[in-house]
Each structure stands twice: as C-alpha cells, then as structure tokens.
Length: 88
Image (tube, rainbow, N blue to C red; front, side, top):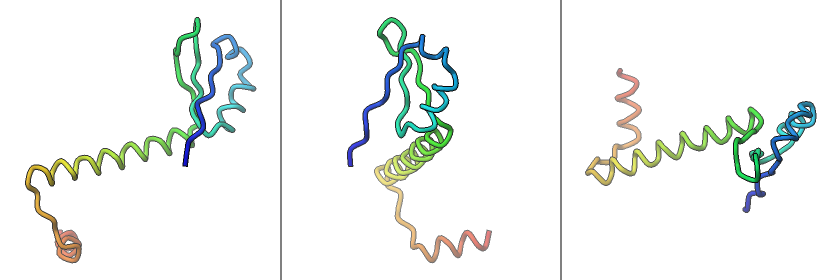
C-alpha cells in the first residue's frame, strides 16, 4: 500500500488559519510549509501525530529487541515470562 505524497503549502498561506486547520484535520499526511521554495516546517493533525509517534515507538522497541538478540540475548518462553511478571 502506497502512502500519498505530503501536501506542500507556501508560508504566506498560513494567514488563512481556518483553512489551514481544516486542511490539517482532513489530510492523511503531514503538510510541508515552504519559505522561498524550501521546506521550513511541517504541520499535521494531532491524530496523525499520535499515529506516527506510536509507530516510531513500536519500531524503536523492535529495533532494541533485535539489537539485544544480536548481542546474544536468549528468547524467553511466553508462559515463563508472564508467570515471572505476575510474581513481581
């Protein structure tokens, strides 16, 4: 599944705040704000931010686990793990 390209808006369009807020709420991707043709900032809805942040946290945890495995960490049995957690 491909993700749509980000929307790009020039900084002078930020004057119309009602339009910008509506665009942020409706956009499934971040909005890149440009100044003099170069990216200057990114805007997005809170929902999109939370979704992206959650995905980044999950990816970080997965990468941390993979690094632990590369360093020789052993796998734990699921039942043993949950039993040890309950006892704590």
